[in-house]
Image 1 (cartoon, rainbow, N blue to C red):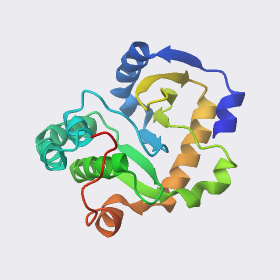
Image 2 (tube, rainbow, N blue to C red):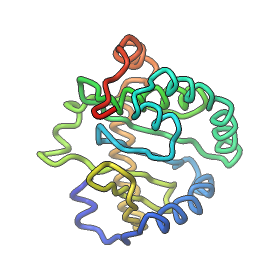
Image 3 (cartoon, rainbow, N blue to C red):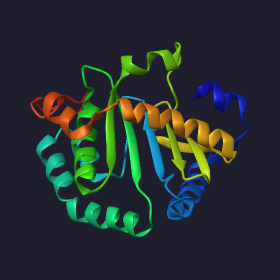
Length: 208
C-alpha cells in the first residue's frame, strides 16, 4: 500500500482542512453503494488530547478512563445509528503488536464499545502483515467510499497533524481491496479482547 501511495499524486492537507474535508465526505459515504468506510490502524501508540477518557488514561487514572468510556455508550449508539441511517457501514482493521502497549490497551477498550454499538472491527497480529511491509510499516489509512482515500499524518509525538488526500478511483479500489483482505484474515475484536486484553492489569503510563 505504501508503494501505491508513493507512486500516486495526493494533496497534503493541514489539520483543519483535513478535518473539514473528511467530515464533508464521510456523511456521503452511503452514496457509493456497499463500499462504505474503511480504516486501517498500524501505529501502536498515539496521543489524543481533548479526549476525556484518553486524558484520564494518560494521567494514570485507569478507573476513571474506563468509566468515561462506558459513559459514551449512548453517544456511540446514536452515532452508529446515524451511520446506518446514511446507508453505509464502518469497518476497521487494528494491527496489534504484543506485548500490548498502554495506549493500545486503552484504545481496545474504546474500540470494543464501538464494536458493540455497530462498528465492524478485526484485529490482525503484526506478523500476519509482515510480507506487506518489507521493512517499512504500512501507513494509517481511511477510505470513504470511492470518494477519497486519506493517508492520516501524525507528528513525532503521535498527535493528529493532517492528511494526504487521494481521489484516484483505481488507487482507492486497490487499497480498499488490500484492507478488506487483511480484515477477512483478522480476528473479531471481542474474541481477541477477551483472550488477550480483559485480564491485563492497569497500564503503566510513562510520566503519569
